[in-house]
Amino acid sequence: AQTVTQSQPEMSVQEAETVTLSCTYDTSENNYYLFWYKQPPSRQMILVIRQEAYKQQNATENRFSVNFQKAAKSFSLKISDSQLGDTAMYFCAFMKQGTYGGSQGNLIFGKGTKLSVKP
Amino acid sequence: SAVISQKPSRDICQRGTSLTIQCQVDSQVTMMFWYRQQPGQSLTLIATANQGSEATYESGFVIDKFPISRPNLTFSTLTVSNMSPEDSSIYLCSVRLTDTQYFGPGTRLTVL
Image (tube, rainbow over all chains, first blue to last red; front, side, top):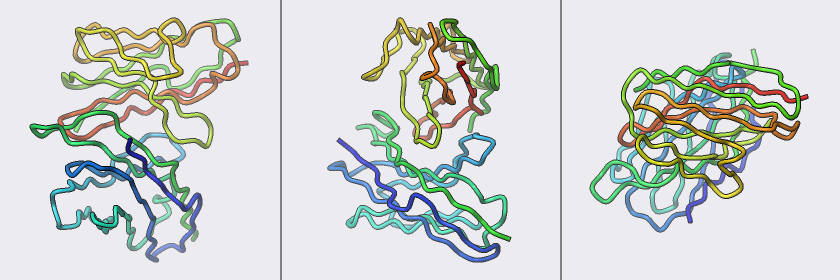
């Protein structure tokens, strides 16, 4: 069974600085997807970034980027130029890839990291 | 991506009553999911609701407590039956498009 571990329950960062959130996972699968979701106090789960395991290039979305280390089963999220609006719970998640592409099985979540951006 | 709406956004209910949560998606999707998120916790999958088949419940969740309807490819409902204070949570609807899941805004339920 797959598991996702986020070892940092809480983190804080000063506005405009950079912060990295850690995520490790355990799987015997070779093809899968990894995600970071953001859940601000409004409770809406927002997709931040997505990575396909077969791609060596790290995904980036504006100020958000990942460091995907497949052999180490590590998938950290870097937030550059942190903004007050980045204050939220961040969840790392894993999903298997289906035999013919697409997805298979359930989305597996970590326990989350609560990020506070301080002015 | 998908735009998902949920109704109600929040409710306060008395124990022993039932509440039905609605989920509407702006496009046709096969796979829909219902999650529960207890305060300060991660998400727990309640059930998968695919159109044209019975909902599949995860361990610890039963149909009598959480009946689900999926009448078409854009709509689903989750009912929380015979509520107790332990049912106080956020309930989230989610859809999967190919290889990515999107979430609704959630329903915050408080049971007194």
